[in-house]
Length: 391
Image 1 (cartoon, rainbow, N blue to C red):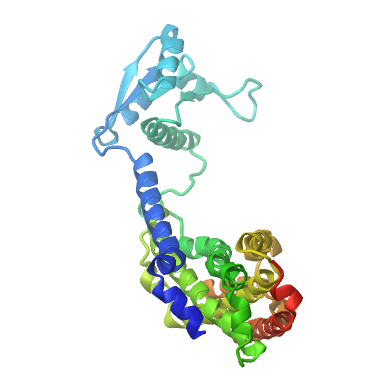
Image 2: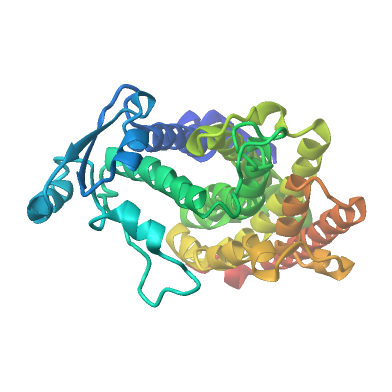
């Protein structure tokens, strides 16, 4: 372990590339994406929406033209409809609204129960590729929708009330939405981060020594082969775990900016959740390094070892999506005896604040047992000269 740790710690470029750089890239990328996405759909505060209207009645024009809405109405004849529609397409104006002739009279005469003719229809032409056009559409649609319900005098939907003076009846907070998103995203991403962190170093650890010819000289030492196998697994697991932690921290801290949510990601979880994630991450890193070490031992070169390891990434992704595929976290303890899949379920339950101590313990024990079995197989491989010296 000392030899492996010294090799990685002393190589600053390797340590930075394998441990620090993935998380740094994720953090910077998510920050930039969040800022770009936030600015992509924002409209300047004092922007005046340019809206062309055909046959707009005075009753609606008075509402839409309210100063606080920043909407400027241009009354145009029906003959200009095609020209204005092209201007909306070309992003030269924001909106085109076409009312049927004598709109107020038609609405007053229409009876939904007895009329055989369709209801008077308002056409709102917009261009969603222009953020100002989308914002104008939402404003006008909300006004017309409210006007529609006002005309019926039958009922209202989400009108301002004592408990919701602004008519906002959405009870989910930003913290709730943040928890829901990371509950789906983090398990898959966390497993992927751990796996890629281990994949950066594990193939080189044994297959690389084969290529350099140093594995044979190491095996002639009096050290036990089982000790060598465990040392390889434990040392690489340290760096795989560190890489995953850096990447995960970068992702959690940058997600609120990406999703444009007012959430303090640092204080979102308690020490308990972080401690449980630590246990799961360590045991999962041991599993990944164990499997990758076996692949590396059978491979003749680093390139071949990496090729063996690539298909396993599909398994990791499927296990990470386990809670989505199964419709939630399973309750049976036997599910937590399956390496990798058990880790994904534990991560999901931890992030949803309903982790079971028994399931976490079963996962850690199963992953450790799997690691010891792989270490035993790796020790047998080290005893095989045909495999060790096969180039």
